[in-house]
Image (cartoon, rainbow, N blue to C red; front, side):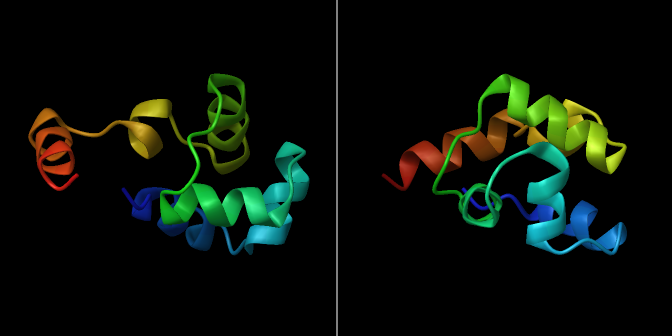
Amino acid sequence: MKNKKLKIARMEHDMNQEQLANAVGVTRQTISMIESGNYNPTLNLCIAICDALGKTLNDLFWIPANERSNENDQT
């Protein structure tokens, strides 16, 4: 599932993927893969991203139950 909340938060901070990646110690490709839903980051990376963007884990990574069940139905 795409992480639109992460992309929006990053853009609100006027950061590109490279800048966020540098702030949290990963590559730009990792940030791209997280935003596109092709990579599940570790908890430590999630926390680092939240810290860099001034958000909580719930703000950026929580998926409501009704959306999780829809995602499972599509597989």
